[in-house]
Image (cartoon, one colour):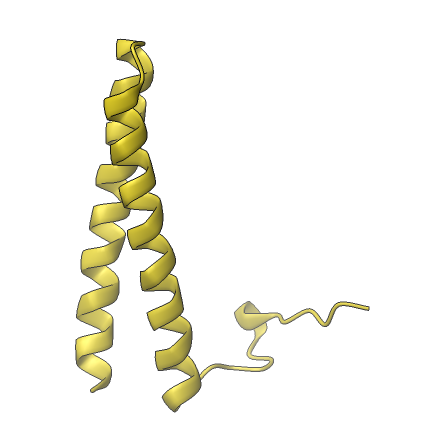
Amino acid sequence: MKEEHDFDHGEDQLAGSDLKDHLQETLRLENQLLQTYAITAQSVADEELQTRLHNMAEGNAKRVKQLEYELSKLK
């Protein structure tokens, strides 16, 4: 059975190196998604889909920047 965590209610709070590891993994995933959306946008002919994919990539770029900032504060 999968163990569930309820971070909103203080259970199993992340701290220290666990928090840093979690944020670094999230940063890696956001970067990967950013690249995927940007590359895919260049490969599709549908202009509306291109725009949506570019918007998604921009959202990931903002999250990447925020994660990098948060990680810099933890060092």
